[in-house]
Amino acid sequence: MTDHLPNILFFPHDRKDQSSKFPVTSRISVPNLLKFIHYRCSPPFPAAGWGPGLWQETSLQQARITHLEKEISLLKAEIQALHQAQGQLQGQLSETRSESQRLQRETHALKQQQSHQEQLQGLCSQRTWQLEDMAEKLRKLAEASETLLTENAFLKVLLTIAEKHRAAESGPERSPPPEDTTGPL
Image 1 (cartoon, one colour):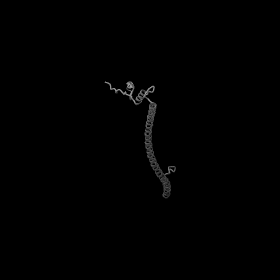
Image 2 (cartoon, rainbow, N blue to C red):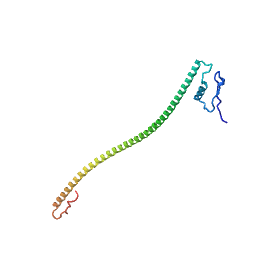
Image 3 (spheres, rainbow, N blue to C red):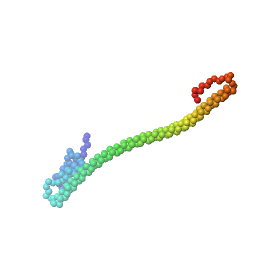
Image 4 (tube, rainbow, N blue to C red):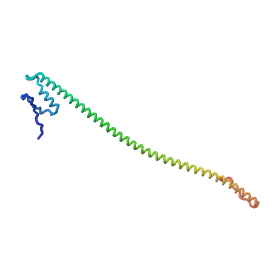
């Protein structure tokens, strides 16, 4: 079973013989109904009972209908343009959102890099301070080592002199073994 819309019948005032049925094949819409009424209500020639005022009123009504049809077509075109603009704006909004998300990811990555760089700079500063401290300790150790080497050489010289002095006092009967003077100082 198929649903059908009821037939639409038009009964013009005082012209029952001109009654007509809206075509079933046409789609029922305001523009189609207006066209049908306009076509059926405008006689090809003025009727005998029509005066010039009624004929002018009919012409004025036809002009109004034509004007309304033009307005409807303009509104349809404007609605279509608005739909296109809406689609473009939605596309731009989508692009802007994806760009915003990309920028947020890049910002997060840059913050992580900055944090990592700050950690590396802190570690570098700590290592630099440790190396400077170690260099200072090594410098002090080198100075102490030089002092000890100088004192050691001085003690060797004193020991040699003391042994020679003791050997000279004990006499020629015991001569000390010759010392190696080319050894490390």
